[in-house]
Length: 499
Ligand code: ZN
Image (cartoon, rainbow, N blue to C red; front, side, top):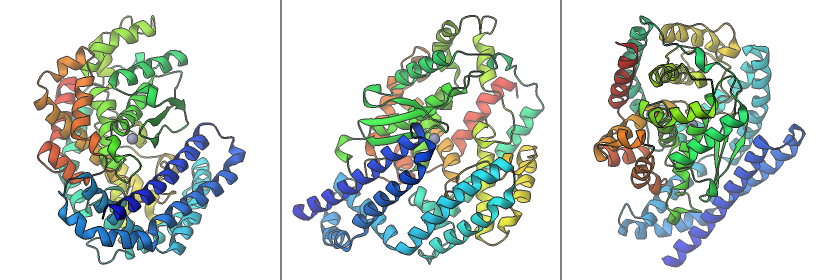
């Protein structure tokens, strides 16, 4: 059996090498490459992804998995090998069901759609993107069909990003969350918003960069096994567990770049602390997008926008930007960076309104897949929901239905993971507080290691051994649950806004 297992591990290692090589090409494209290189890069990327796909779905892999099935059943179910065989089998079955012709059509359609989306967004005109988006929804419905029978047409799409998660689960979680979030926002609207004028000043870009790097290091991002570069849309990428890179963007007239650095560092800390035993295998990465997002949002918001974090960092910020914050008290600063302002753009949304942006997208995706609305109805349906949930109306499609890149890339089923990540981050923070009773004091003293180590012990080191719901339950004792997040929001904003 060990021969067969080693053979399988060798093949999976090669697939890992190819997909991380792809990550290097993608990182280079987003960080360094001249635009003119994009056609050449597209062929390189397509060749390598095809190679990775072919190696993985080869019948030989299926035979190995089959032959190893009795062996797997004898292993302790949570052992590395048992989890590896389970995850490899799930991934193999999933990919095997999708015909190669579909894979190439989908790649061609989404690659063209990206340009049409960019063009449409620049012109703020949905009609330019509409034909491409119709094709994408048609293809995604076809994809779901490969996995029939299913409980819901959205299930196979969601499963790609959140293994094991069902549409019914997400709907139930969001149904509990939505009225509570809307109620909180209405209550906040009755109150006077904190002053944020001091956040809109000129801040030296290099100083911002240095401050961000220092903060990322303090929370546990290991720069000896990573680096930060600039990119238009910040992201984190893993070449191997000892080379996990982040990117950020800096604006000279505000320092939102710092929060973006903390966010990406949260993703990177996760990957850097996966057990080395899982390297070069399908287990050597985060458990799912939602679990990943729970890590980034935890460091960005639950830590990075907390009073304790700034108790430690505010004097340092004042010293880094002399004269900028002389008359701004720590309390005023804290309230300012946590101001709630219902807006049009998801990526700019504060903690109180963010999830509503996500719910809107989920509802529209499901409505189109179920045939309840047509793609051509999306702009109006979008605007209606924005009014209903957030009380704001986009003036054009660019700040409405065209704002996010995900649909152009065919990533339907992706959005819920952002909101689920927020919920998990609050569950983890509550659980960590029980395990580390003086956590707040530790953070106020600049000791972030204690929390990072707790996360590594409970989340990071497992890589993707466990399905997200199982992992959350193992750590917190309950499945994904909106209550801790609402407790967190109500306490935080109750205090800031005097609710
Ligand atoms: Zn993220």
